[in-house]
Length: 222
Image (cartoon, rainbow, N blue to C red; front, side, top):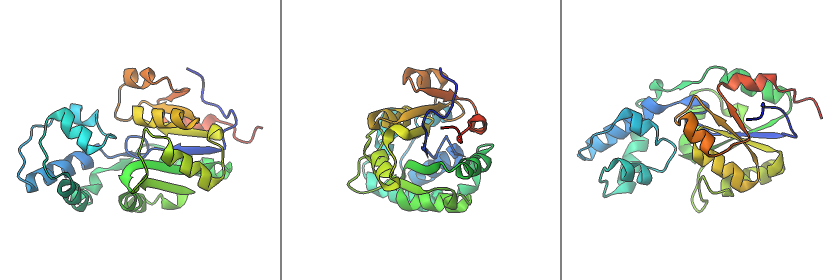
């Protein structure tokens, strides 16, 4: 795997859960609370559940064999309960420092998450990061989600930067596939919700063990 370096990067797009915010406990507890409210029985292995974070809940429930008949009602309840457990979420080490470092070096910064737009913005407000991003893209109606390239291409268009000058950073196969599908460079992180083996299988250009590795990049070089 190549050492992370500039290589024409003008824009870095970050995933949220498992990349900037360790939110697995919030997601799990919100899920269980919503299922309880719907009186749906379940047995959830934390390790299995964590390894599925990032996927759509329809796919998660299919894989862990939980029968949710009214999915829209589940999502509505889940979103209403999410912030009851928000204090279980925490920023990964170095997040604020890295975002400030990138801004000082005039690198455009965006966020791409499968969380709905309003929820993504509320989470960023809660962790005081909203102002760090030039663009925030959550799940929106009529826009396909990761691994589709559509949301990343829309971000690039809004920021007036070529996908080839973009680095997509995330902890799941969906992030890496989205970046590759859009023609961007990709970076997998090892501290999120997938194993090294799962990340390496996707063949990202870069793999990092800590966000602090961005500090070593000289973005001033042309």
